[in-house]
Length: 161
Image 1 (cartoon, helix red, strand yellow):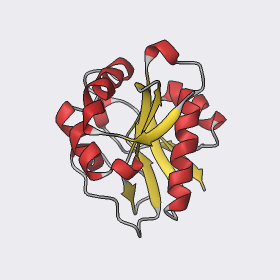
Image 2 (cartoon, rainbow, N blue to C red; image 1 turned 120 degrees about the vertical axis):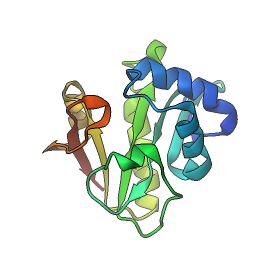
Image 3 (cartoon, one colour; image 1 turned 135 degrees about the vertical axis):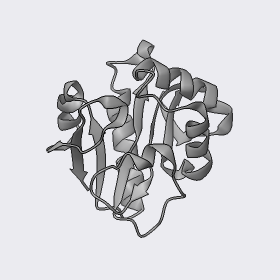
Image 4 (cartoon, helix red, strand yellow; image 1 turned 90 degrees about the vertical axis):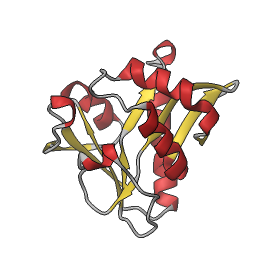
């Protein structure tokens, strides 16, 4: 049975292993950056586990802008209760369980948290090949992002809550 919980520092190595399976070295967060996310925004850093094994996670800070800025990847502060948007910096699932709905369940779990925190929408950027996955989960493609993260072309995806 899949369970969801806020990320804990003891899970950092497992989280980093999944991060590095899901993203290129240029795209992936550093260990220090991920540790900062656990420390500062654990309320919106959700880990999916089964028998205490980390199978995936979703993480992002609250923000007051509809679209993500590259600055969010470098440094972040604790979530502000008045921010209107929940962002997603990373959604990653262990290779061994991809295709089993873990990513969709993590998106749904974050939506519950965002609604409870009175956010208006969830915003993220993704590569073109991931657009159909997010559309399937209720997100709308709002066009090419201004992000230059990892030198890729990213798409703004928004899910109104």
